[in-house]
Image: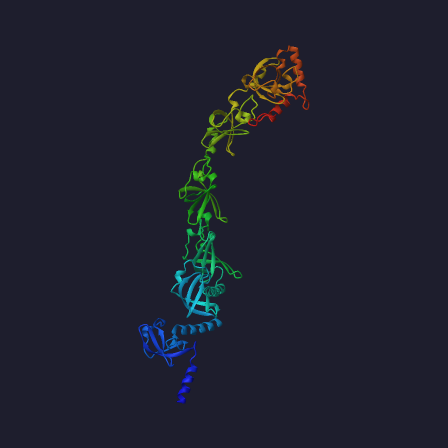
Amino acid sequence: MIEMEKLIAKSLRDFKEGSIVKGHILELRPREVLVDIGYKSEGVIPRSEFDDVDDLQVGDEVEVLLERLEDDQGMVKLSKERAAHKQNWEKIIKVFQGDGLIKGKVKAVVKGGLTVNIGVEAFLPGSQIDIVPPKDLHQFVGNTYDFKIVKINDDRKNVVLSRRELIEQERSEKRQKFMDSVRVGDTVKGAVKNLTDFGAFIDLDGMDGLLHITDMTWGRLGHPSELLKVGQEVEVQVLEINKDKERVSLGLKQTQKNPWDKIEERFPTGTKVKGKITNLVPYGAFVEVEDGVEGLIHVSELSWTKRIARPSDVLALGQELEAVVLGVNKEEQKISLGIRQLETNPWEEIEHRYMIGKQVKGKVRNLTAYGAFVELEEGIDGMVHVSDLSWTRKINHPSEVLKKGDDIEAVVIDIDKQNQRISLGVKQLEEDPWKSIDQRYKIGDLVKGKVTKLTSFGAFVQLADDIDGLVHISQLSEDHVAKVKDVLKVGQEVEARVIKIDKAERRIGLSVKAANYSEEDIKAEAAAFDSLKPGEDMVGLEQAFQVAQEEYRPGEGKKK
């Protein structure tokens, strides 16, 4: 009896709550499993705690956690799950203290990342799933991966994992292997990982290489996506290796024959070629004449005569056309093309169509400060200089006598074939009235005319045959005149005496106050007029005309 009590007491001392003990299955019930651990009463465990409940048999040995020796009903409280959890936690602690590597199965997506079953439930942050955080986390659920335990909280029984560290470590080893084994000039295979505006990143089995857009093709490429797509496998050549920064530059076009080799032999200057327009820019059009080879038609080479502002006005993207090779630069990989060279340059025979002295007709296309451009035919302009508009009038700007769109007649007075210029004259249509001026006007003649311009020193009066005369301010009245506009107005009819004729300088001096003078008074006034010198209150006739030209500018108004 005493021995039995000792055995019972010893048995009770061996069973401690919270410890893991071994037991045997006594009975498999519909909702629970009855287990004998050698204690005075059996324990009950829910069937849900067994992963392989269908394979269980009476008599099987199981390890369970002894939660309580007796519950309210006097039964032993056991747990299969908590026993497994405790055993797994102890293993995880040992793994964490070692290399930290462990396998696990992704259970579910939670806020901020994933839950993973590694024997216990662990947390995998979204930033630690891959090198580039994925957008869709559900793709990982149900999959088994290798992880590294990066953090453990023993009190809270929390575990934090990282998959990214293992991937980075693996890629680092692959990068080092790549750097040690690959040389510049080698051809390697990879997959397009990412596309940018400037190129593509190629995954070379753990090593990223940059394939710049300029090294993708010998031809024109607007964006890498026109040639490559993510995931596409490519064979590229290693152009440069920087071991310190672990950077690799790659080339795709270098794996193909350079179409610019012997380009001068295939496209000599003057050769006619056919091609397709690949790009239109403000300064010209790019034409693909063969795979990887483009030429540029500058906007100035589109037509001999037409004024083309933009190539898109006459050409279209994708259009097939014929052109002439104007020049080849192999080093810069440029070919200059021209379309107008397919036709004869009209300026080469311009002197046969517009001989000097020929009378022509045209439309005023544009006005400038120095003359008017007249369109003789499409693309062929002649220029009438302001000095060739009139024999007699002092015209400071062509807008005084012409306006844009006017149809006019003129005479060809010069041809500059090299600079493609035709000089025209309007005044040459008539005889120069100054050749016979002394027959038309004599000193002392009483003439009538209309005031055309007022200046600070006098007034210009238009006489017959559009000849201008100048009435100096001193010749307006016997009385002192402070301002010309106090005496005369533009458009006013006046009567005056001719007191000066300068045939060489093509100038006539008039006097309003001498209209009623005698012949002797006129001679005296003419002598006084000639004696005027620059710098005095009254300027001479020559200076008066010069000042008039400087002071008067149409469109600016008269200077005050």
